[in-house]
Amino acid sequence: MPAVIELPSTIKRSPKKAQNTWVKAHDSAVREYGEGRRAHMTAFAALKHSFEKVGDHWEPKEQKGPSDKGAARSGRTAEGVDANASKEHLQGVASRLGVVGRSRMTKTELVDAIKKANRRATTKAATKAMAKATPKAMAKATTKKATTTKATTKKATTKAR
Image (cartoon, rainbow, N blue to C red):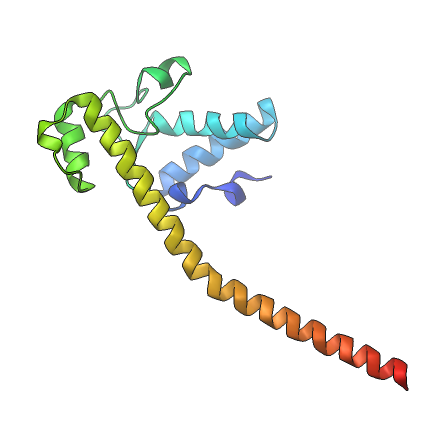
């Protein structure tokens, strides 16, 4: 399946360059490994070299490279947070995300707080998107049901004659 169709919502809300990076890496990984989890993980790993997750979207990093030790050696990652960035950078990101108590946090605590804030922002954006899509889906289902009912009634009337 083309990566453009499978584009995760956080990447849809990101700059075009992030979208293109993910799509190219995903398509290449699908050719190499086949469709599935491994292709998605590979695409995200490629994305994390140039972008970091901030809230519900991805933004360009100041410096390219692995976002954390896990990304460098293919292990547990910091979920898109640039854990290799300076403490000042992390405090700035935490400030934009509204993390409380950031000035007293260690670098590790900042990374964890940003991960938590990112998850919260992504969930909020997904919930908002679902709420927007639900009325359209309901209208479509109602229209389809009405059309089906009319067709069934017409068939029954035709058979009765």
